[in-house]
Length: 394
Ligand code: ADP
Image 1 (cartoon, rainbow, N blue to C red):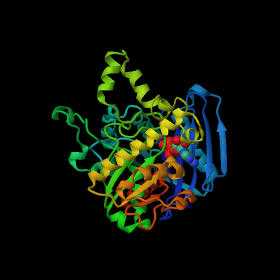
Image 2: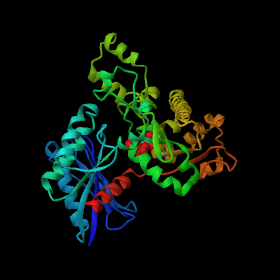
Image 3: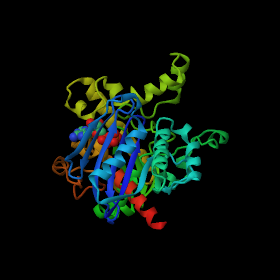
Image 4: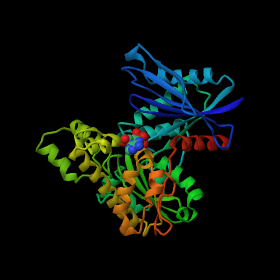
């Protein structure tokens, strides 16, 4: 009998899930997948650790099949696939821990009450994350649950890095720079010593480049600055998010173009970034394969802004020993890595083109002053590790 840790990442219309063998220190993956199209065209796909399909399913009771039905299905799936396994805990990805949480925590009523107060800070994600907790509490009240936050890793940042230059009364309402993708950065910090012990003790900038993209400066494995701030829209241009724009642009949209908050939210979260600039796609693979000038411009803007943030983050950490690329684009696109590194030549980064094309972990030359790495992230494993560790403490 093995002890299964279930990891859930619940969004508005999908739930991503992974199951790990929590009885082993290395937490081997058992299965992973997602249920998507909740409330519209619900369907699920589960794969084993090797990526082979275990089960795919769709449901016809469209409008009524939501988060509750999906989680009940997942618990059943685990039971049917792994009859010899016992579900022992659920770890949740929770986008916002605010200033309350600087690490993962066991969930109880007090924790939930605090997390509910943060919903206005992340209205697109927090309610769905918390809904999954409520559902598990209802259908399996016996199961310990753990909250793992995208913000917690950044709470080591100095006060200066977390502040906006706004009046104290506004800051006191929680309008400050929280940072996101913390579970990804924490995972990279945990494995970096095995790749580059010197960089792990020193100053590293990690570029998490996926549909959502951000960068983080770490010193000795701790976050000192990041490109995302109050929401996950600040910083780099992303698949569909604009990244940083002059706040005056928002005032112009409101006052002159008569857009309301909902329309602006839609614009900056869903219609900007690579999609908005190219007018073609949010998918980097599509843009790289295109010969349209607008696709080329969108890619240039993306790499230019990454390189600018690299300089800014290197200033925050007062130097740079290593650059790490991770997430969908960072792990899989030698092209983007090369373009960023070419713009970072002034920092002393020299890319080894063969190693980069070959997909090696180290992609800088031996004489490069800054070592450059491509390292796969694993946010789900990070959540499973926190869940396992907190269970052991209990
Ligand atoms: P999410 O932020 O949703 O977790 P991912 O980390 O999976 O996203 O990243 C998705 C992005 O990675 C997409 O833009 C996709 O085009 C890009 N990507 C995946 N594989 C490649 C590749 N081989 N070359 C370039 N981009 C890639």
